Length: 333
Image (cartoon, rainbow, N blue to C red; front, side):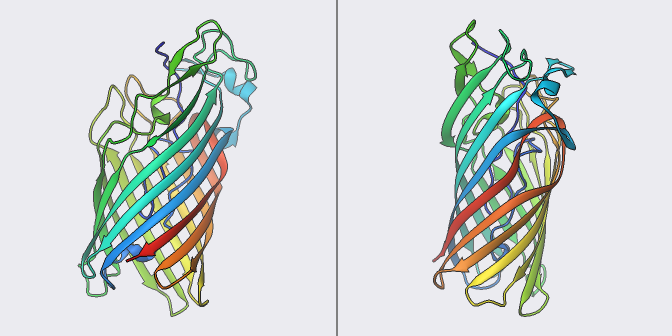
């Protein structure tokens, strides 16, 4: 059974270098867990980061407001009735290996593992009960996502305060996983929306700039902007181009704990192609992200962040999280 449905796109959150959420504007913004890794100055060597992120997308939104499932079911799009999704629960485990030359350059490799549970009433519901032949299905997937390789160079000035980012996202994640139809009149397997797949099937270009400096011995800050755009189309699907802008302030006055505050903004264009949801993808998000980094030893640190939305403007109807939570451990060697 091959079903075409409106998709809500879930994100793969990468460490340090943003891993854009395809064309999802409702899944949370990318944050930087430790912007010291942006600089190429200092000690040469490797850093291994393992991070867990949780997003429970259980709130329907349209534009800048919430919308009830009943109201969403009455919307007519350019392709027919609006799909009404119930939830998308995302669990991400991301391993990041970073190498710093100690001089002008560094490179970061990010490998995400994604567990995602999704349920939708399809396009023939009243907002609470699914109708027949509406494409309703449930899915539960676990898979490696798309790997990213991002280099950085900061040899433009002696202080190494600013630099550029350049890299690629590879199509290593599957985009052909299936779910289970919940339509009693049409049982069997169901195609999962392309935006809910672990991978996009496309090769993407990643470009960015960053700046990091200290106000004084107790306070430091950073700013970062990154663009990610698909260079290819995969099976009539192309994710929308995304722009992430991140800024943060950190207090260094404590011995073993560093409080951080970040503001994370993201703009994403809608997906395109015959197998894309062109109506309910894309938009703009701004998140406020407080966090803590604690030193266990000189080479091991733990961190945690919570992201809270302060502005959400999504195209069409999309599921959004009320918050995202992240915890991780970083080891230098």
